[in-house]
Length: 425
Image (cartoon, rainbow, N blue to C red):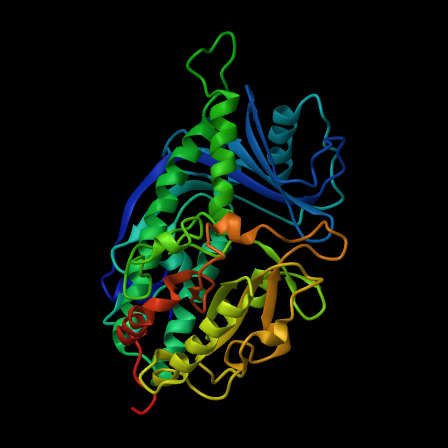
């Protein structure tokens, strides 16, 4: 696997980078900022008649300034090409001061790092060579840093690929699983660059003023800035239908979108009412997480869960056919988590059949913690009926792969059969 903007492997394989280079020129400088600008420790965007600037807090006390530059600042008048010798970190900070006026940025003790660049927006024509060699990150997509997706996009590329490679190398899945890497991540890169193109245009344009009615309004700029948060957090990424993203039963949880990451949601552990965010219980350990939303534990529901447990133990069921020992280890294929409805003071979680509570910590409750301030409302938020049993399958990378009612386990069997080898093989 290769990940670099000047990837020699990409060139050797004849993979082209499709797209264009913009006319927008930006400078970047990292400093420990001595300033009276009140939001310097927040991700901020300043859009002024003197240009635009984005502020990104970094580790320690450092701050990164992205600063819009004009042609006269950095272009050679004879060649028309970018000339880094015309710029310096001191000059970059001087431009930032004009943008931030009337706030002041004092001369720092040192400049940690700086550079200038022209925004390029390109996507590789393909992301792999016969599912044997893969490119990721800057090797397959370049864009401006305004959406905060340089390292994030690269890490999510490899995150998407790593669990699929693990399944194939362990002999649990066929090579076809690796084809979904390009299917998912190339579409993501195209969506990101389309957003980045619009965002960069807004960011580099002049603001709307009394003398410039055609400028960018504050509302337009703010909307684009907030949309970028979906890319930055990953919550806004949506993978298209495929063998590992099956939307056949989306109606069982209409607000828990198949193909998207599980959103943050706090549950309490049924055994001790301790609050946990569901994302902290879905580690990227190559296992599929099976979330059984079982609703209220009525006598009838307990009998229904006993019947479901017996079906899950059947040799033809996906859990036995594709499961790998031992539960709770890196070598297991599945991890089971049960989510109940009810009051933490009354629910007896040990009534959940043993099959659905492999460990006491794997049973959660959709209720608030003992302070009444954390948790609750998940069933309503996701649109899940507490009067039925619903299975939510979370892929090893944290994305929802499938949702199914308990009476449609044959569809779950088909889901795993599409890309997974039975363990007897």
